Image 1 (tube, rainbow, N blue to C red):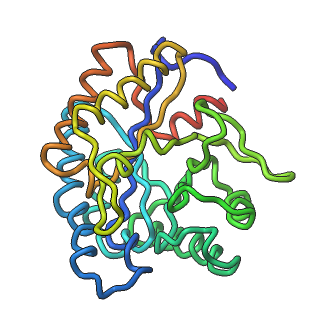
Image 2 (cartoon, rainbow, N blue to C red):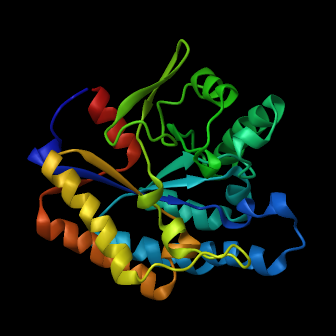
Length: 263
């Protein structure tokens, strides 16, 4: 793959956001009104905060959107696309691939594509699986439908080619430690706890320092209902500023990284 980054940047950073909204909870039951309201908060309050921060910083991100979210919140997601951010595919009802059969996996991919096209006028270049789990069936569907890249696997901390049997796709890898959800989200009865804001920021900046030293690409994953709460949105603002103070950063949506490394 192509070495180096545009403009002589020291490091490449992708800020990505999974706009699950209600879709992530509907499979568990539409009667959980309080839980569904938290998903809705991500679009109503979290998303505008994120867009304002990115606009002030002049940074473009990648927003992975389930088809159901595009249908429920079309105007909010059109604002994302109109601001020049990338829209990626994130299933339709946020169903985890390894927990549904092959027919349902196809429906998740194809209904998601249809919803993004019909509501946002978008044909996504990239895919991120709900809960970061791929199956052989979903992998084959990504190749069949011509996706340029996937962002669901963890086989490297640099862009690489993920393979299954004779199928190949460019992978822009992720990791749970670089996702806001394990650090900052909490569900009743699960027994986890929140990471202190300063510890969360320190963890992400430590990984950034590693990427800076190795001159590689890094992906941060966020959820509007998590990072979009008031004090946490301030962490995103600080993260961007701190990275810029420490090196020359190419902030790039995933599709731009895909085109660069394969160009």
